[in-house]
Length: 115
Length: 116
Image (cartoon, rainbow over all chains, first blue to last red):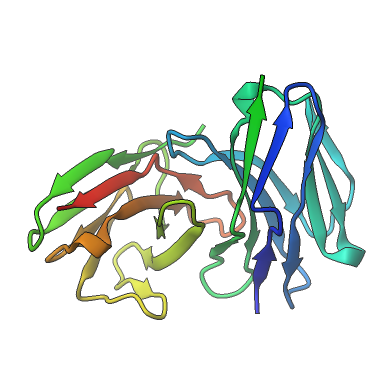
């Protein structure tokens, strides 16, 4: 079965703090994709990153970085020097490699960054 | 980049009426579209998958007669909530992908449905 677990329901930090959002996934597929999306209060889903299961290199994009550890089935997301505008719900997702290739979402982590 | 337009952004309807939500791909051909539902402070749950010209495939527990999905063209899919009830109030989001199964999903901005 395909499953994505985001154990942190809500995280509160003060601006400029670093914060890591955890994501653990389960899949029997050998090839799969992992995603992170941001959902601000307005509701739209903002694509942040897509990672192929064969590419375990960590990635950095500005204040964002991702740590993909296949051995522990984790794909964690770190925001460095958080800002108020980072306040949102963040979803980790797994794309199934069978059937319609649908996206399975985790339950999301609500990040609140206060000034 | 690819854009998916979802309309309306929000709608309020009376119990017993039907509501149609449109999802359009503006600059690519959406071979496959997915419809998600999100209750407040919860995750996105897939309702159904539709391929252009075919009947939609519904997830377990989703009533196909209540949530009618039409994907008659490569740029438009519609979700009709029939005989809406207050418990259908939710945030509905569509996403679309072109023929390449490895291409990323593009999401609409969502429709907030309130049934009174």
